[in-house]
Length: 168
Image (cartoon, rainbow, N blue to C red; front, side, top):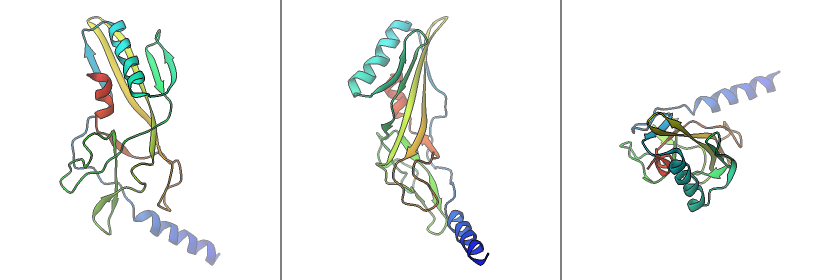
């Protein structure tokens, strides 16, 4: 019984060290969508071009429903500096954790360990088309913290850079 209590106390102490802290920067809120007066066929071609030009593997593609889902890919990741500015302005996501002992934003995983999928949906509207992008199933494949398990879904914010690939 003492062994179980000791393990429980260690678990409580370990998990209480890592808490979410709101990021300081301004990040776009989902859903990420663009309304355009371009035709559906024109938009669809541009979306497919982004996948082809960037070498992004496709898991699902269905023009009739306007859906393309990527395979799981490595997501470029960054952290904020002390002023809330992104250290890598081109990164796709910013994970956020807080270490109350050091009063610094930290990530529990190396920045090259994040993967995820994204889906793009195009549909026709009265005045053109709308494109919506979602980043989903973000996980870290390596772990450095006892509190987090390999493959845990993580808290993050999109920087808007992945969205901009499709929305410009």
